[in-house]
Length: 57
Length: 442
Image 1 (spheres, rainbow over the protein chains, first blue to last red):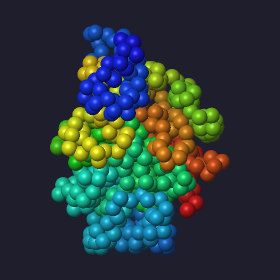
Image 2 (cartoon, rainbow over the protein chains, first blue to last red; image 1 turned 90 degrees about the horizontal axis):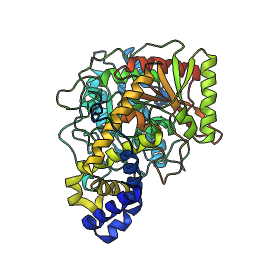
Image 3 (cartoon, chains in turn purple, brown; image 1 turned 180 degrees about the horizontal axis):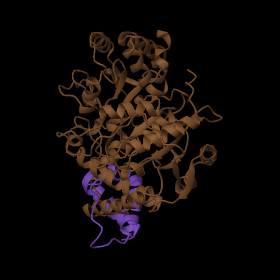
Image 4 (cartoon, one colour; image 1 turned 120 degrees about the vertical axis):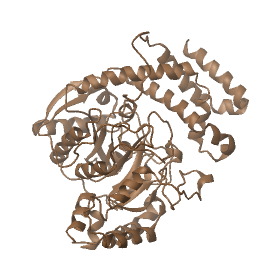
């Protein structure tokens, strides 16, 4: 999903959860998060080989 | 002699007590006097337990055991529970919270003969809202965070040793900004039982001290399995004292040098040349994953875990949360579960790659932080310390001197999982080549 779509989805969830005013206050942080999530989502991952990290165990 | 006891490290003090050259009471009185002279400016302490510390010191004088930290005063970051001594996490509703229980790390220090001098200022719940504490090298600069008071107290030589914790860069960065040694072991090496969490899969207990020798002694006391801590590792504890790697092979991680401020880059390049001249073998390496992605993975995971940690409490005490922490929790609630899991998958890829890099060298060497201590409106840049926290590898920050503004500079070494002895061995050699750090001009 493109970054702007992720940001819009996060903004919509923020409005629903916290109301318009607080969602506006969170807007900058949600923009940063959208950038991180877009970057994460762009990475191809191996279906068989790449399980979530478990702190080295 | 007592007037200068505040200027000694943990090993030196413990040795003097063992030889009966000084008493634990002499030491506590000396550091309290130092604190009295500096605390109004530095503001490193949340709670100072004068009477408790003096009482402990008096009791220790009748103990014959050669305890490894006998008589060494210690500061404890105010997220570690201390039995009978208030623990606030800098959270107003906890201002008068006096726990019945105590963090395992604190209990291990007490059993080793250390004296708990008091609680050091933390940023609220160990995130990044700036604290009141100031940098002992320049009162207009931050000491860093979140182990702000611990770093300022050790950097200002009010105490030789202080506990801290690192979820991104909260031990090594403040240590670097304050001219002290900061040590973070492998994830799971030191118990975190009865410590307020921030993000479970990152939170690692560490400490700030004056030398690599002090770090080895302290780790010997704190390391080891705790059956009551689910994250505690069962790996055997090694020998962390006295070993020094001669002319280590060090990997210079170029991604760090690319991203450091120019003056920091040039300084650490100069340090690398000095180490090479002294016999270190240096090779240039690159991170296995782009730095931006490493940071994105870290921040996404941390937001979600902090949101989960504080999910219940923020529902009751929302207005008591500091702005950055509140934003982190509220925004973290909105991150999809799939994104969290994908971030954890990329984190494993990064860890595997980092372990491959470390197979080529004794330790990795980088600047500890991208900058020197900035102003007090921030706790500084955690991006250079976070990668080692993310993959659970041990790391240490060593002071390298001061820059033209009189602010401390530092390098960071990272080593193999559960091989802290090797890391300290390389760090000990580097420390010897770099020479001693002067005291802050307070």
